[in-house]
Image (cartoon, rainbow, N blue to C red; front, side, top):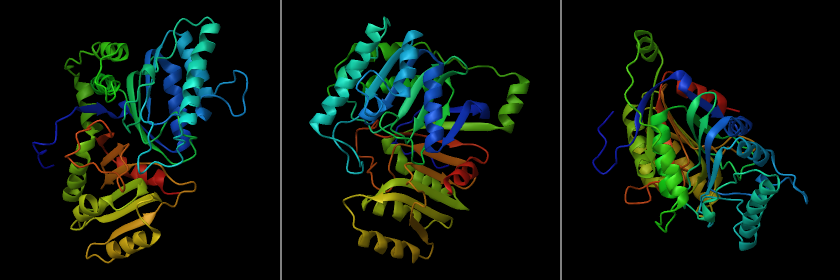
Length: 381
């Protein structure tokens, strides 16, 4: 792997056993894992969702206090005295987000429903309530959950899924990683983005940082058997910030000898230089899948791009997703052992290095035996 350029910041990289990494592919599968993390949290639970929909809070057409199973699970977590934080990513629509009710009326409706949920918990005599960070937006497009599972320890789930906006009916890609060091890094990120664009310290930031401080992450001396297990089934996991994504495109192009797979929700003209140009000279088979076009590109332009890429000396196969309903996964995978699961729409968003909002998109790169085949087998309908 080439050296990381100086202007690409170094981030957390760890070596794990296979049983510390859960890949979750599919909408229903992501929903199951989402509920599992809520149900097993013992001290804290932090949910970062880019958007929040009223349908994820209360049951449809419910005039009484019939909340969704997600919020009923959160209620049970509060009863267990779990500290619950919901961080709300964005109010305004990004160019590659669709189906988002961005009216002030919908925004206020969501705020009111969230406040009413806390009121219902108080009426029930529950001591703790959900911390909504004063409804301050993080302005991040990342999607993650951090929790300390009573069963398996500290965990972060990184996903393409808007947990509190999704109907879990599209193909999603997520990975849950059980490791104190990575969790500590994500807790620091959650604390930082909780300030939003105001850069004002808050009790939410201080409390989340206090959880990060619990993880000292001393180097552990492995037993001989543990060393053998690591050697046999070793996974290397690296945190990927927004401006590092194109670096991994270059790595894939340099390393891949068999296949490069990219999945994106939206497509527009953004990837013309950073992705298409990088892929041109790769001799690996290249497959790029998108679900929908953005408003910034026409059907005719997409068809022209497809023909142009198909006609290259080393063809690039750009195709619309075969999934019904469409996929929402954002993945870069190459050959057998490398996959990057992220919030970034590869074929429509700009992750250039001159963008200073490094936490706007976050993913994880995993290198491990046969991780790509597992994804492709699940992705193919």
